[in-house]
Amino acid sequence: MNRSTSENDSLESGARAPAPRHVAIIMDGNGRWARARGLPRLAGHREGAVAVRRAVEAAARLGIRTLTLFAFSGDNWKRPPDEVAGLLVLFRRYLAAETPALVRRRVRLSVMGRRDRLPAPLRRAVSAAERATAGGRGLHLRIAIDYSGRDAILGASRRGPARSRAGFARRLGLASGGGAASDVDLLIRTGGEHRLSDFLLWESAYAELTFASVMWPDFTPEHLETAVSDFRRRERRFGGLSKRAAS
Image (cartoon, rainbow, N blue to C red; front, top):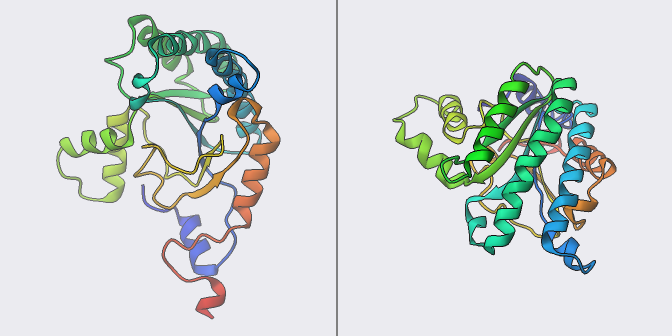
């Protein structure tokens, strides 16, 4: 989507960034966290689900409007079949267990990515969770499962030409299943890696990037608060000049 009025005002005045409206997280390091403790990789993913709960609660407290989490990429099907099967079961159990809490907190859930390759029980759980939380007016939680940024862009392009960037962004949200959302303000990747891995490529064009060495299961509300505080100290220019350079 196009920059908001507040972002344009920030550009013109050279002011520091306000709190991020849209935070995206690549939740990396579950398997390595488990291996370091002599545990099966799936144990790391289970602990990662606990970290998701903490991150959702913290995001709501911090006033973040949209939180997008990268749970399973379109390339993750290359992983061992046992791990993939266990992950898909874990996703279904997470949705069943967390949906009542999301409803209480007025969190709206959307699941992004392809659904045709997901097992039928997981597809039903996704649909049930989205219906149950549809009335949420607080945090918009988007979870990317079997998601590819490139595929989402291709899918939006196949719908025909868009007249504006904002129109294409809305179409992109429809194509990915995540619904309309603003551009990513802050993108965080845990696990010590420094790449986007085909995540929200269009939406992250002007995102501020933070790469954390902590593995995802160890990611705490304090880590999120630190990343947000660092974001607010940055000056977002969107191709323009800094206040010092302009003067």
